Length: 248
Image 1: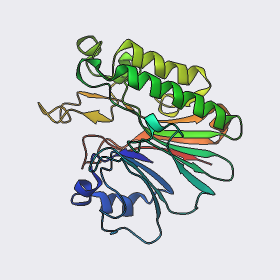
Image 2: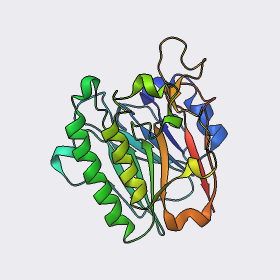
Image 3: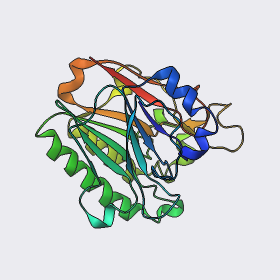
């Protein structure tokens, strides 16, 4: 499972522990945790081993990985590029037969002011994914901060060119799929109206006016093991909701 919690300390005051106890995911990737292990009281089950990638700027960005049944062989943070490794946006957990990437892609911001940086980051990430995939299959999940097609956003014409739905960002995501990685949700659901993020304004979530910007991608050779993929849009606590897959 993967979930942008928009502040782990915040969601801990809401439904996170109930969610964790109910779902009991074997692997849970969190984005935008805005915290590190020393700033969050451990209230979850001791069944979980946690790993963290924190931003240098306190209370900003960051990712975390919760492992229940199996521990990774090793965990590394970042891309190994100083420019890109200051915001805790990537974790790589190596398991016996796959790599798990916990990804939080930079937002291009209003006016696309951070688009050049984001494009550089995207290019480096794709190169990294390809390099790992040459060794063993990859599962990459998280907040990719892009609605790939018009099916993935409630008002495509109104949002064309906005951060998260610019042609450049969408083309970058297409390159990932063209490199052989599969958008797992689209293997099971071809229609629109399925979203993972909603604006906190204008009752957008209640009206289901949202964006699908959270994904779980897998290498082609994992496709035979993919049993289900879904969006848990009824899970509250963040402006995003969890996404999930089940692999044999």
